[in-house]
Length: 122
Image (spheres, one colour):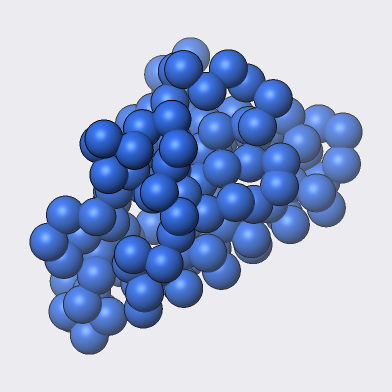
C-alpha cells in the first residue's frame, strides 16, 4: 500500500508540489503537504479517476489554482469553524475543503476534506 502511495504522489502535477527554493523565495510562501493531506488528495484523485478521469484532472487543477492564490494571499481562506481556536483556514472547493495553516513563510496543507465526512476528524 505504501509503495502505491509513493508512486501516486510522484505522478501529481508540478503545481501541487512545493517549488524549488529559488522559486519559493520569489513567491515568499512555501507550500508543504502533510502526509494526511497528500493521502487525502491521492485518494480523492484515484476515486474520481475510476469513474471520471476528467473530474480527477479538474480536482487537481482546482487545488493547484487555490494554492497559487494562497501563495499570494496566504490568509485569504476563511477560518475553519470547527477548529477556530487552532487558527486553521480553509478554501472551499466543492465538495472538498482544503484545510491549511499559515506559519511564517509557509502554508501547511493539513487535509483535503470531503464535505460529507464528519468534521470532527479535521
